[in-house]
Length: 151
Image (cartoon, rainbow, N blue to C red; front, side, top):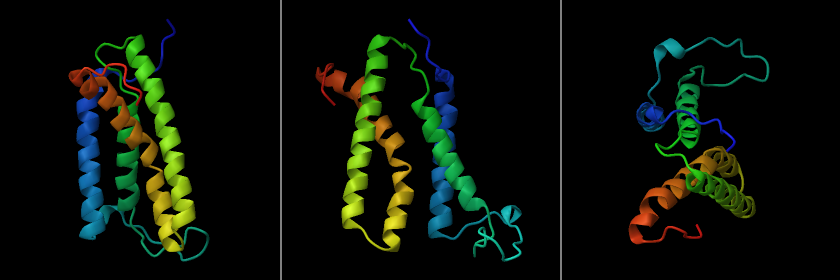
């Protein structure tokens, strides 16, 4: 059997804690305008990076969210067999299909600056959809006697 490159199973708990902390920081930054003062920098006001917000807290939030979600997608299960690999592959396929369906829906229904916001959140949807499908098929559906469910 070919070995796939997966992170160790013991990384799941620290990655979940990082995800929770990053989402909490994102909510605090979005709702309460929270920023770390030590991440502020001065801009000369020229060039393509001329932005009004001169604080890198937003970048830290999103790096934590994207990094932890992506790493969670590639964490091995305690028992990594061919059944888990087939669920993993199927979940990736369905997440890509569903993500592009949502993207086409957004392209045809959202306009203006809201479109940019939707594209921003569309970056996170493939990994979120994958995690939902993968863990649903691996842990929840077998409890209901649906081991070979289609989705």
